[in-house]
Image (cartoon, rainbow, N blue to C red; front, side):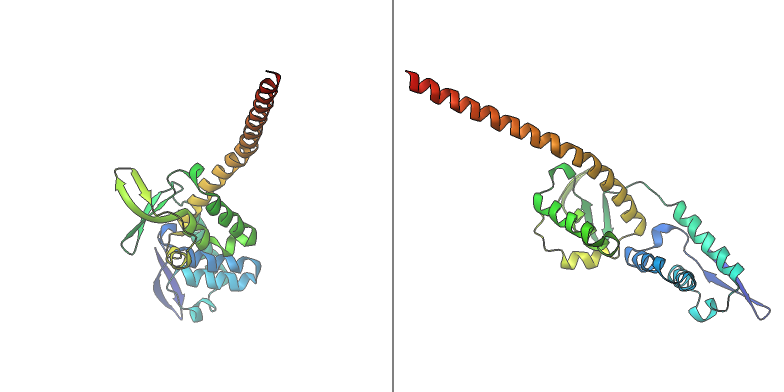
Length: 213
């Protein structure tokens, strides 16, 4: 997207992102961090992150021009693609979301829970590094990914290149899964408890029966 800025009777043309898919997770995180600070700084840094307009020039823009550019950015974000792509590519390597979230290990879920408690906004790359791992085998829409070993240091850095659009879709997907999963856990534990009680009762009856003979 082109943006024309008038300065000293001359109009200069600069580039603004065309879609939210162009924004990386790392860039998006920098913008998120600004939301609690100065609104002026937030506007300058946001426009600088999403365009090639020099910061020096940004500080010379009228409030009207800043408002127009910020509105354009907001519209692009509102039009982002919300469809989750479970497999995507970064630097020639395919990464896939866990094919079946109900099958994630306790270790994976514990790390995810820890990152969320520590602050989701600052741990997004780590969370994505747990949810997405290199694809080891793929046939059509069916694929498998590397087993989780808890070592996500390198993958966390890679995930910073992930599209912010893709991250937001993954968060929405995982949120809905979590809501269902947390409802399932109590019923699952209750079922397990009931089965244990039945086994215990059967054991008592069998022992009682054996002692009466």
